[in-house]
Length: 244
Image 1 (cartoon, rainbow, N blue to C red):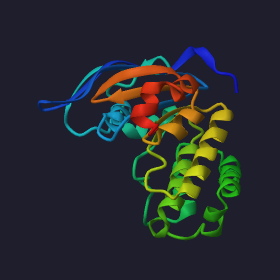
Image 2: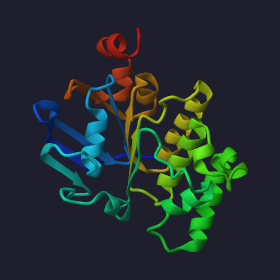
Image 3: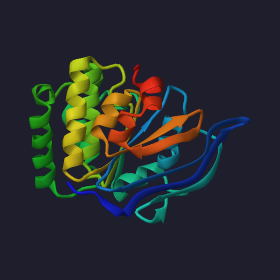
């Protein structure tokens, strides 16, 4: 899918987040354009998840400064449950599935803003084809699934709303290598369908291999940005994040 580099889907400017005297995010700028897969990499505690929570309005009480625009409109004051109506979906760290609902019910919840019942059923069938394990267990409670199965479900549920922007927070965390490969294959496939993605990920190598562009975050600040393939071969990125 060709990337439209002229159209901002997400634009973060001068974002600062402080918890009391602790500055978690220190005035960062990030842009994600139409059709791009952009990754935000960095060590644990760098401020990556805080940045995603600032976008979705799910931060605990803290001081937030700067601007966050989605499709040219400010997200300030937007309640998180309205974001899905605007086709902005997030797969949170820890998956966040509805544990006491079945797999199928979770997918239906992902489509709660839609009224096209036939289309919803088509999408459920589509994601069951992508993730056959979910199809086999469609009536099973989500809370009884393995971590990898829950990650599959969380991604499929987010995609049920046909998002214009998909936020992914640490999708590989705690998964087996085989499951990580499966999840990243789906991320690449979704990107090739033209869905715009902002990916937060500690596995810098996989993230940069999948992405068009990357940002490196360290101690609340953006320290590097560029073409993802160039960053893969940058000695500084190799030394700090790729173990080379």
